[in-house]
Image 1 (cartoon, chains in turn cyan, brown):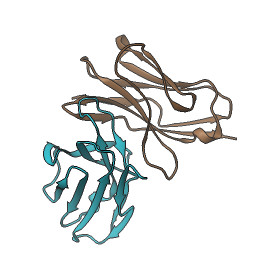
Image 2: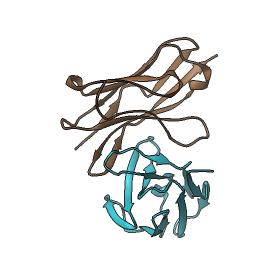
Image 3: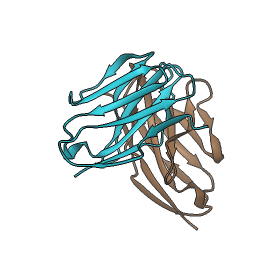
Length: 113
Length: 112
């Protein structure tokens, strides 16, 4: 039933490790996003894919690599994790990128020790 | 650069009090405006949106927001809050090249 689902919801790991967060949407939307919510609660866009094509790539370290195997999935892989990567990562999707209306997943809280 | 500012970071109200959360944005062109809400332990969900037309929009759970173009504002209001309105509220504006820009959020706590 869940429209946008992310796994895992919680992730605790050591500095230097590599981890992935997965996202799936069953809304039939064409566009998917990754947002990062930092400790000050600002939500900032990281990436956006439209029909498996990367359309937004904000100033994000290249340790972060998104992958969209199909338009219903958008995964986020992070290499060589750093303390500053600790945050809540939100996946979202939208039917029409032009409207800006997003449907969010529950978030994945990443803690890097 | 586009920015969204929410004036209050924390608001504490008693039940039945009236609520107004401020939101101002910095872009002069045509934008869509949103309020999202995140209840404790839940995901962000859309509360209401403005695309065009009547600048007073109504959302779920008795919330409404007014778009005042001359003031670049989109304030959220509710005449009488309930304990269940305790949540974090985010104003968002866009899209700018398919991007939404979010404010820092306002944490609302309603005392029963």
